[in-house]
Image (cartoon, rainbow, N blue to C red; front, side):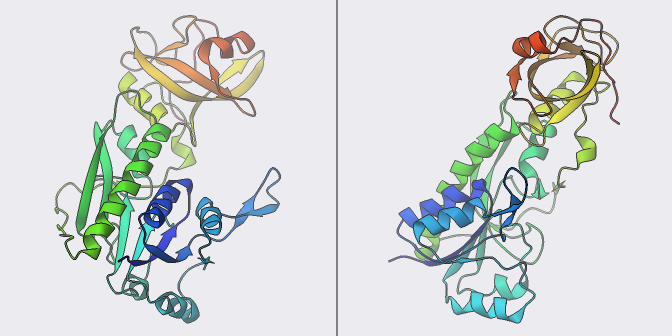
Length: 315
């Protein structure tokens, strides 16, 4: 026996779940993903999403509606006669007609410990807030944003050095395992659902470019969390004068360090920067158009001398 599944997802994060459901023996009757977007080196080519590409390799029909406002798109979805829809980072809010368009409803893999960090950027927000744990939750979807009852929880520890990219990869694999387990229980009619608590709700707003500049006037731990929460994308950054030219420099890794001084001051030749409280050492940096470099390699081509004062506050 197997379930007839409609899979809905878009980025790399979603692909392991798609593949795992297929490997578990379920019939993936259709894949829904975001339409191809401009990409390539010049942005002139239309690039299919990672899920789109994975589905084609698996021989699964792919559908790319802009939304589900058209009656034709809703009718097509329902006509698949699926048992269930599995949603992982699809990128669209689903109308009730779609939420109720399969026999057993829609189940979402969400990268947080709900109700904490509902919304678009739960991985980045958890790290930026200094959380020491997060997880993947499989929940049954309803009309509200990430408000549905929870079926399965898989917790993951967030270490003090873990970046958003590293946590993304860990949750991506954990989420695939959790969803396979959930579908096995659903098929056996043995998937209990627990309502989310009303307390502890936080929303993980999409990362805005205006919050990516590093504010060295904050305590060192907050600066460190900000850097690793935005690494590798979009990247936290500061400005410095390099060889007589103002440069924007991304910081992709850091660590807490000893030291004190005026916020934004470079304290030594190892790129230890004074913060509002304490200091951080910058470990991996990247200039615009350049490749990521370890701090000492970066400094050989782009010297930033001890005593240099970087802007302490965000723009």
